[in-house]
Image (cartoon, rainbow, N blue to C red; front, side):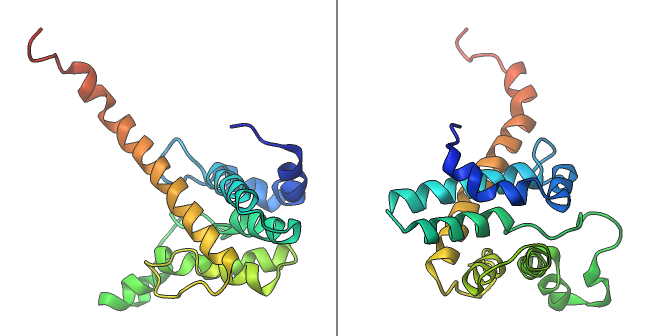
Length: 175
């Protein structure tokens, strides 16, 4: 993936931040991927989409930075007991990491970095349509789209890795 200088300048303060660096140690979408790699890939894809749409420099930077911070929850959700343990039934599902991490990421990102309302909205709602909160701005729609594409790619690569040993043992039917 060729990364240009403009993209790096937009995100440099975030990727060099000590708290963001910790995301390198949090597994995400399979054992061969982490939150850092996923977030940078999502941000780069969002940057490319914004450029292709010929959005302003300000909008491009806003979208790129929101995409980079969309999963910046500040903790590894797999550690310890889940926060939703106090709930039962469907309420427990609604309070799971899947549905709440956008809000945690927006709160954590706001604590460490200056965000616009549009960026906060994009981060909170990036799990649409799984979370029934429709993004209000173009930032949210682009971050949501890019996250889904990048996550799908990562999960498919993870599944392909799982099946690789099986495929290696299979013989062609007409050999």
